[in-house]
Length: 190
Image (cartoon, rainbow, N blue to C red; front, side, top):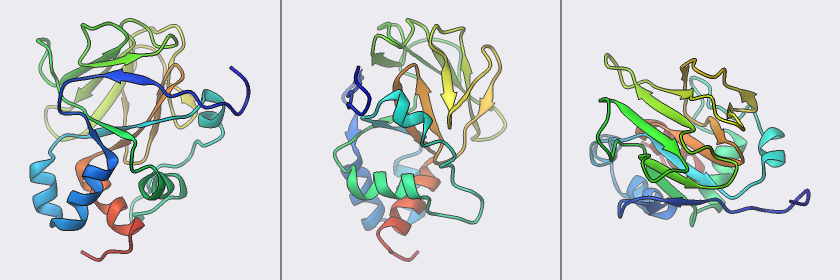
């Protein structure tokens, strides 16, 4: 792949796959409580990018007290046709897990040659809504904001984190964080 070229990752998933515009419309029409009750799952916004672009874009996480960061706001305002994947378990397996990889056995199937058959697992903390990612010893690694995740070690995800499985890059949000960033990006109060 040439530097600067764009590679669109294909992700196969059930009928629940939406585009960002659907979420934006809901955020602008609903209260935060209504949006979060109707969209209770954390999401990955699928980015059309290269790994080189991803590595130069790290550090985009939302900090406490901030609702807007440059990359997240740019994606929200300009990437309305991007696909959004609700992170929920779709296949039998341990409760609170979402398996990610190239195989159809996964809950989130990423059709990209740089993604391993069984690449990573997302884990929901049983005592909270916190989601962690654990790399399963993948060939090309799992990355958060440009930092490689240690295989086998669970790492907490925060709103606005860039998560890459090989070259497939996603922007992560909890429902509350997505609502807040959309509202801030469009200068809407409350």
